[in-house]
Image 1 (cartoon, helix red, strand yellow):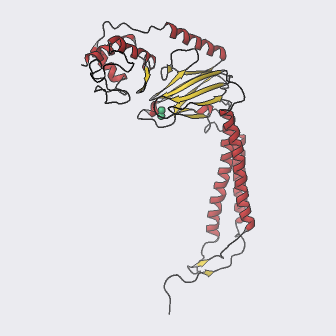
Image 2: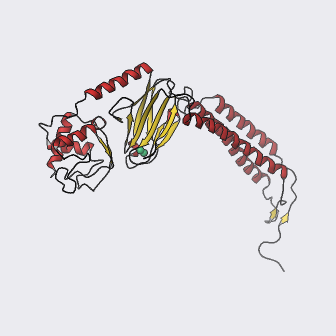
Image 3: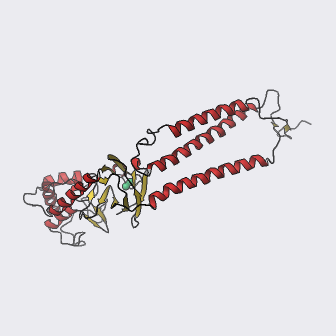
Length: 369
Ligand code: CUA
């Protein structure tokens, strides 16, 4: 009686690796060697910005790791997929063969198993060693830092703190500055949510975590202007959290820092509020404040609290700085910014507020009763 459905497979003995095995192997090997030479000897500036002229001393290690992994990833991809395609074609079912024809089952091949265990293991051990060297240089440097500074992430800007400078600098109004050729230590943290401090051309990236200070150590190699980017989603304006780092000659850096210290010492803490125009203040509020503050009760927060009843709220008789909500104190917060349990508000430089803007904003906020 004829059976319908699967029956015992018909095994055909297939000896060898097929007629095209060695030509295919040579072709793939030549391709992989060509890619390896191009990756190792050539410069990949289109993938690795400034690779031919590294911007930090850690860049070379990271790029070497990248190249090492690229060479092996390309080779593994080419061999695995190339052989899969080759064998599928070479040992396809021929016309006239039964549909249940299979090759001989293979249970063991010890030499093959040894190789496919030993080679990946060796590859991973080498990768681990190279990674350790690159990692150690950033987190456990051999040289003491000539400059230690702090970077604090905020929704949605970076705060830069320098030794001897009593006020912070905020992006995007201010850039970060670093001296070329000097080892620096950057202490990275966050005032609100998790951000990430990333300078692609330095090949350095580290999380900015509230309550945790992470230090990275490196030497910027030569003057230049590079992008700083927040590379961890931190809220609606994450994509705008960008800044610049200016690497300059040590003398120029010292001059800049001294000028910042002098400016901070002489900057007036207060501005004249006479002639503040509430109507103009409303326009400025919409442009510069409404991304973080609603004209609504205190508890309706966006990033910062609602400001509808700033001067007349029995539940919050004081401002966040624990002072009475007088026009002068509102102006002081606008001038200096404020960091507290609710979060952090950038100062006037970061918000680009003129004296007139501040007077107008105070007039507007006081008018919201
Ligand atoms: Cu800060 Cu994304």
